[in-house]
Image (cartoon, rainbow, N blue to C red; front, top):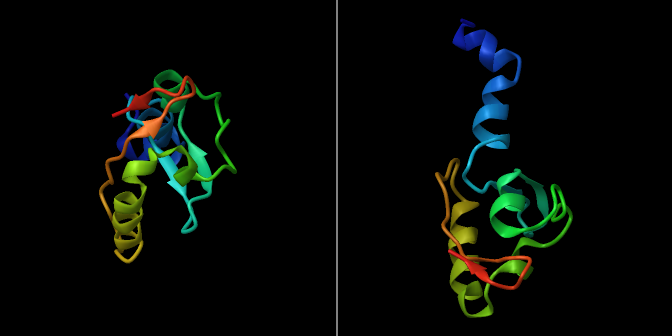
Length: 98
């Protein structure tokens, strides 16, 4: 069995937790541009792999929740680390995922 250090060093930890994990993960910049999303976005929301990269994250949130989400998002950008922000996202078929 490989040591944890070897596992992390070879990028296998990242791949198993982030890329292949079941949670939806987005990395966005301060303006909301999507820089990365994992494969769960395709499986759960219906968008193609990397299909949302370059798009604006805020464009895919329900309009009635946008102001509150942006407030929480802005607060999170002032912290060194934020565990997560929960959100609803508009799926490719226009359904809302919670």
